Amino acid sequence: MRDFMKVAKALADAQRVRVALALRDGELCVCQIGMLLGLAPSTISNHLSILYNAGLIESRKTERWVYYRLAGREAPPAVRNALAWTEESLAKTPEAEDDRRQLKKILRMNPKTICQRYLRE
Image 1 (tube, rainbow, N blue to C red):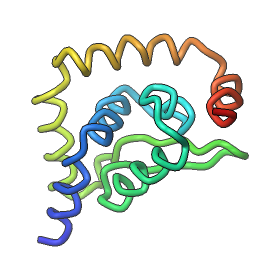
Image 2: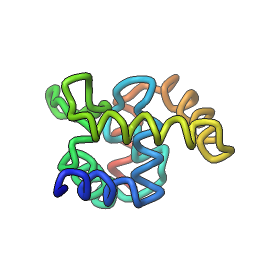
Image 3: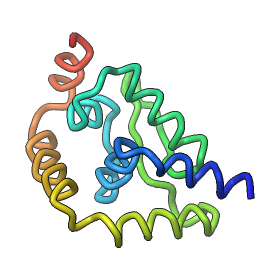
């Protein structure tokens, strides 16, 4: 039950749900996520930590950059089901569509430029 509660609590925040939906098409750098949400780096870090500890996302570090992606097939059923339910329920909402359009713009930008700009704010 503890793992279920971690997943439920992690998805009980609109910003964390936005992160999960943003990651449905592939991994993103923490700065890309921050730019999408328009939140301070410390706030983004906190949200990502909660999602990571619940098993909903995974990360990898390359040099100075940290990239996040949704948990894969090896994730527990509760995690896979929660992510599927989140996408089925919210992927077509106006908010998710707005984020998807914004993310397309962000992905056309050079990630290093995004990180330099994001970390200065």
